[in-house]
Length: 105
Image (tube, rainbow, N blue to C red; front, side, top):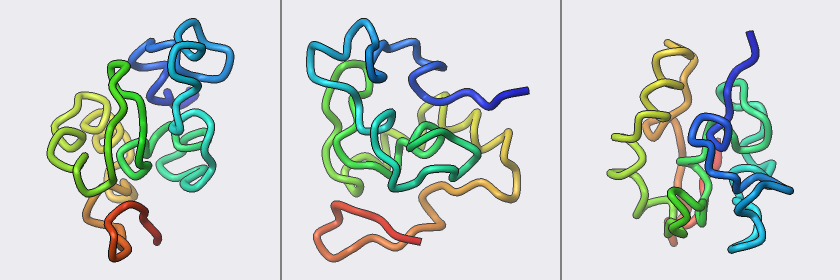
């Protein structure tokens, strides 16, 4: 069974060519590759919480650090955490740079 990416789960239409992508542009979760493959996702699709500037509910989320509280309580985050089990990459498995705007592993 294919793993669902955030834009598929939320049905937001913010992926490339999606129904809402023309409004603010496609979401970095769907277009970025900084965390490609993490948690089995396409692009940043199953690690959207690790990408700054994602478009959750058509609202541009801020820096990585500012998203932690909101994202860690998200139903999609919890779904991926449950599906991935011990191999889940969430907030506790990252290194944040000094300006708290990007992550690395």
